[in-house]
Image (tube, rainbow, N blue to C red; front, side, top):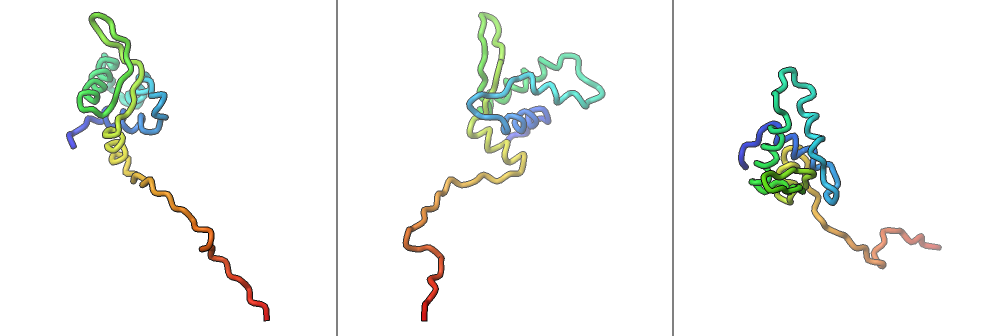
Length: 115
């Protein structure tokens, strides 16, 4: 696994909790800089560059509006590979999709014996 910046880790962790069909808005990532005293001047460019680097690594997919000169990212979604890495960052274990079927005859109930 490649090294990720703290902002990139924050993006992956935050986007893991959202529903995958709708995506997460890029403006939610500005909260990363709320608690920092020395804020950088151009926060939006830093976030967009981090998003573009995550797209290049195939960790997220972006929904954008594309013009002749520039693309504007609206929402992002995690790819399956990005979801695995985000779960590793959170330390949660993925559940296996195993389904158990009960047999009708094997119920664990005792039949009382009448004397």
